[in-house]
Length: 151
Image (cartoon, rainbow, N blue to C red; front, side):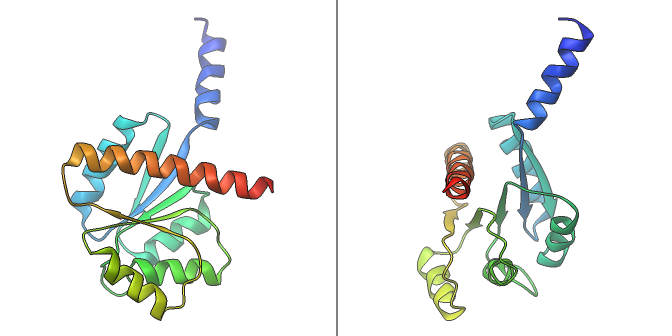
């Protein structure tokens, strides 16, 4: 492969790359998740934020295809984050990646009057299974959002 062909291939790959923002107050989990997600799907580029405020700073400077957020974090939790995104009319696909039960998450979503669809995904279980399913969910959420834009 010539140098020009290689550069064109790299550009094509970057255009197909999915930029994901992962928000969690557990920095060890962020590091491990980045390694696993990027190794399971080479088109993923995972950026990290340790809190909601940090996430909004990153969102103001870069475009992301999806957000993965923990539910339980200090100051603002994942649903507070989603509510603020909704108030800003930001339709980015949003996945809660949490150890909490779906019932607790649904109850808080109702209290906050969050009407927007979001996915709630358990981070407990066999890591290989959990992250493989998370990859599938990210791709499906991004495709669903792209299809919605085309309507």
